[in-house]
Every structure is written in structure tokens, then in C-alpha cells.
Length: 188
Image 1 (tube, rainbow, N blue to C red):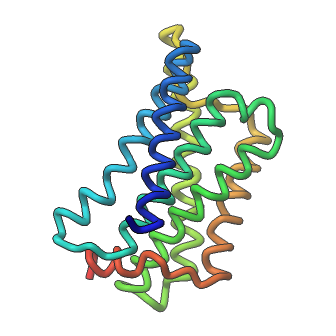
Image 2: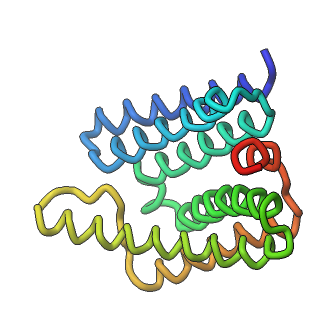
């Protein structure tokens, strides 16, 4: 079996363990977020199957989604509160994933705008995520339930957006083109 496939299976297994731990602790937010991450790992293989392609970029995408989801699951299980830099790590990694996908898509459809579009697109999606955190908090407060996303305040929001840009900057600095086969299969 290919090493990347083994790695994907291992991380997906770790996600299932995190899901079980969240369930055992009665941590609804961890369960919802981990279940969402586990479901997201199914999207790249389903897309590859639907498109009839076995491009390696799809396996890489599945792995990256699984790792980002697992780190976020660990955050929901307590790392966000106990490890000061954990949120920065997850935002950087998740934003880099978004940026790598945007960059690849823009290289296929609008190569002249790929750098600026990737930075602005990643930042805009980061802003939408932060708005989602606020909405989740407000909905949870209104219905007196545990929020599935946690908003830690204005300073945290600003830092999250900074690390989203850092993730995008890393992708652009490294000229990361891992998802070009994915973009070409989907868009091209």
C-alpha cells in the first residue's frame, strides 16, 4: 500500500479516536467538529471518483484535510485552552490548505492574478470563518446550548486573520503547486 494512503488511513483513524473521546467526555463541540472533519476527508476521494481521476493531488488533499481536521479536533478537546499557540498552528495549516487550493485554481484559470487572488481569497475566507464563529456563539447563547465554534474575542480574531495570511504567504513563498492536478481536473 502506498505510504500516503497509509498516512491518510492513520490520520482518519485518529479522527475517529478523537470523535470517541469527545463523545465520552460529552463534548458536543468536539463531536460536531470532529465529525465534520471526518466527513470532509471523504470529499476529495468522492470528487476524484466522480471525475474519474486517480491524480495524486487528491490523495495529498485528503491527507491535508485529515491532518488539519485532526489538529482542530485536538484543539476542541482542550488544546486551544491549554496550548497557547495551538490556534495559530491550526489557522496557519487550514489557511495554507485553502490557499494551496485557491492558488492552484487561479494558476489554471487566471495565472496573472494567482498571487493577489490567493492572498485576498484566503483572507476573505478567514473573515467569513470568523463571522461564522460569532454567529455560532450568538446562536448558542440564544438557545442556551454549547457553541460548536468558540469565539475568544477581538484579539484572537485579529491573530487568526494574521495566521491565515501567514498560511497563504507560506504557500506563495514556496510556490506550492501540489493541487494543480486537482484544479486541472476540476476547473480545467
